[in-house]
Length: 82
Image 1 (tube, rainbow, N blue to C red):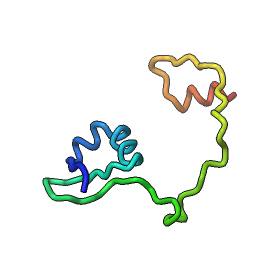
Image 2: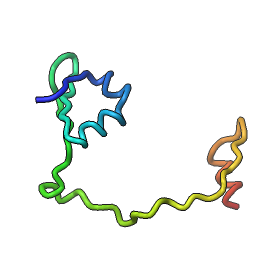
Image 3: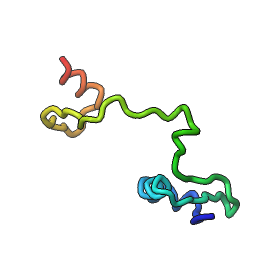
Image 4: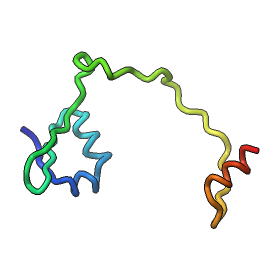
């Protein structure tokens, strides 16, 4: 069936566990010791909601932006964007 783990353990290492499930390892998630959900790889042929990405090239990142201490993010973005 696959590995069983609790929600806390899942939250602690979510990205790695999702990668393992995507690679084919079934993961059974339990809440208070009771199985509630199963993670596993997507079957793209059976799920029409799965669509491939439109772009395959890496993102074009701009130059790094200095981060100021004590400044609200919305105000910093407003200042940067003009």
